[in-house]
Length: 400
Image (cartoon, rainbow, N blue to C red; front, side, top):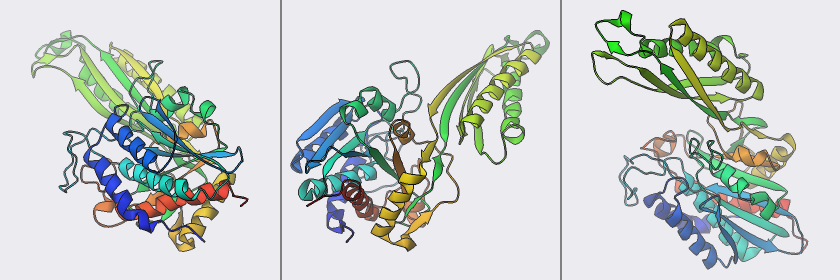
């Protein structure tokens, strides 16, 4: 019989709202980590490793004699946003908000931890991974490159210290009916890269443009030319996105600036398209600038890889999920999303699977992620926690 964790909904709601009220940004989740550790100890979990990847936690629950192990991951960081919705648990930290549901993901894993620690109806080890900084693409890691929490935990020896045969994750999805699970074989999320473009011209008086090289004009032509990459270079059957989201230049209305700076993101589903887009960006930036007598430099950083669910593990997880919620409450997604998810870093090292959990298709639960009106639906937490328990009991079956 599928496990029913509805009796833990009130607990998970309380934990989630505490975390929501006290949000912390990536790699600074000190109070959040302390709160999690306190609860894990209350549950009777003794193996708790801290400081992994900065503020990350790995708690291990063991049962039986098997050396098999799985990992289950929840992200714990918030976003640099000001919450717009008023409630008795609204963010108490100015400019910081849980607008992606990581507080809910953490509450789900805590609920599963409480049940697993009490029942231990499995044979092996379950590593509960509370990961920092999932949102922190663009923060510099130890090697100077962008690094999120998954990369930081891997660098700190996550898989060497806690060997596991598989790893699992979930993310809430506004727009899907509350409590429904969803997934797909192959690409689920896109690779998420970032880039910066510096254009160097020649400053001067706005009334004498013929004596200057206007970097704003050059940057504007670069913005237009870049739109041709997806439209005319990428295979239309292989989705890609190139968005320039930031432009900075100038100090006054009558001064032609010396420099202009652009920044944006690239999202791709395949390595071939990722390579192609990066090369075309470089070609366009350099050639357009040269045609105006300016200089331009592209700084391109590869961030999260594309998240792909392997067919064998996905099929098994799908069957377990359907056994939990029923065939009418599991959705086989037709297309991937172009957002990024650093859980993909783990799948580069060990097999695993990532699913989505509906947060509602009407009301506050349907508000887009990373929106200051976003609201996590606490009623879905028992389903997420039960999924973790079901995976532990199926991948680590007890012989008792």
